Image 1 (cartoon, rainbow, N blue to C red):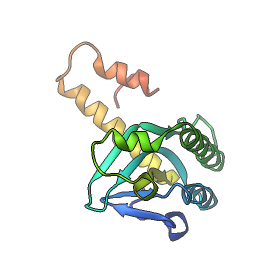
Image 2 (tube, rainbow, N blue to C red; image 1 turned 90 degrees about the vertical axis):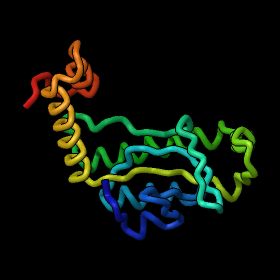
Image 3 (tube, rainbow, N blue to C red; image 1 turned 135 degrees about the horizontal axis):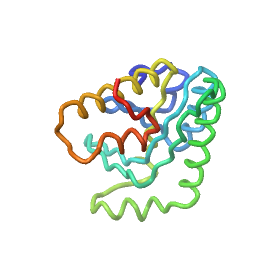
Length: 166
């Protein structure tokens, strides 16, 4: 994935570790800039980022895009993925009580200051690399004989990969 995103996409974001987190108000603009710059958005989730450097990740509050379809152009996928994530993001903003979520952490969290949306943007080359690395890892695991019972065939099926290792 893109380790360093263009400035127009990261506007309103903070970088913690290797993850960018956008304020609620700046994330829609980041999606628009990403699409205009040829990036797709795989999705993301909400986090509370505290001043002491700790993170409270709410993985259950996620907005993801569907996989790229066969023969879908990159421009179409970029547009669709950003739209799908935006729709999910807006739905979560509308339907989630972040004050209640903050209270569940048993910490002093001010959602108006600590809430960010962490998202993952990729170029076409990034996505190709991810797919190749995933296929190689699956094939290596299959060849190792470590798992019995066609586990890797089920993984290939779930991910819609060819059934035969390379």
